[in-house]
Length: 442
Length: 65
Image (tube, one colour):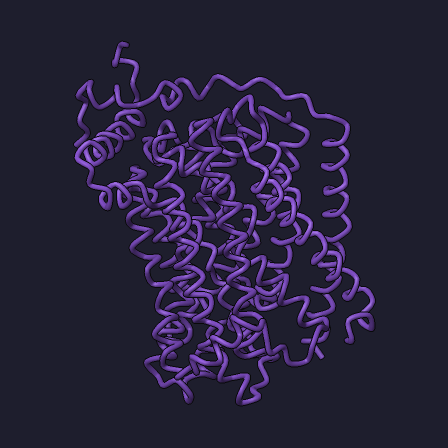
């Protein structure tokens, strides 16, 4: 093999593989997990984004500690099942999700999938900058400054031109998602109430109504969304994971799901005192309003941690979602797509991330834009778009021509099919009670 | 600094090489059932999005009042 043909992308990926090979040979298993972790942790903590944390806070303030605590755990189990499939697809095919859809199903279904992704990602990216802006306002930072810092961070991360460095930088930032845990502890939660909620799936004050169904959808949309599928598969390929790394890829995804579930439940718990105090959250304009309302209850340190967590959630998601769009767009147009590319080779990949970031940031700064309504609606849209994305994923992961022995087994298919059905039913119920509010009790 | 030692690059599997990714995979035949499922979910999304848009506008009007 003539290594004159190797590109910068190949050399950098091979350099990462060398470290993996050394760790595997010397049986340093923890180091191996550390080296191979990344896509799973990032996708899960990335999905604990601005609108997701607002959804969890709204859940805690509306229902307290009860039904939604085990429900959120269930959604992260769903997320693990779905995302584990993307790891298998990535290591088996060494292709991104968008290019697989185009190549295996043709452009008709490919463009539909891309339209869903671009629409969902742009809307979600807008809400990430809403979160950054809202968190910044809590600390007295003007909106243009905090949004500008967010944009600068995204562009700076792209200047690294190295997948491994980009990944470690975003992972470092993503640990900020765990700020919601000390914030929850400052709310002095009752461990018995949390244990009771986990065991009994209750209480559920108010029963099943329109608000309940909306929060069900918002909480699903806070955990499983199309961008996650596209991002993790492409990141697994960009990182260079192979079939030999599948176990570590699964550990990475499971660890990410666990950390994200802890942060999500912590957010519900942190906001639960607002439910106990019968606080009216209907006029809240952003996630930062939760921090302001919680300040007299959990103290200024707890409230600041909450607001910082909201900023972090927006920033990490802005980095991962813009990357998801970049991978998918470049794959669709058969352009090069990797963080290991130089700017000349990867102009479309880098340009898509910068372009989508600038558009989203610009929308946030439009005076009078309905930012809160957008935040609450985005997760619902993500849930609705998830059903067709999941079907395409299931078709690909059952495709033995490309998956070989890594194709789905019976359990994974039953679980995947049940998730599609569940999401469709939740969406249909939402549609029914939106059009006919009397069905859901108003 | 990027190492260009050949033993590094030979650690990559053939499918991981950037040149290998330009070869498209063959198109898959979709059965009638699969096509029907894909169309059904597409219709589901097309029906659901206007409902979300309606709920969004309704929420905006309520907030305005």
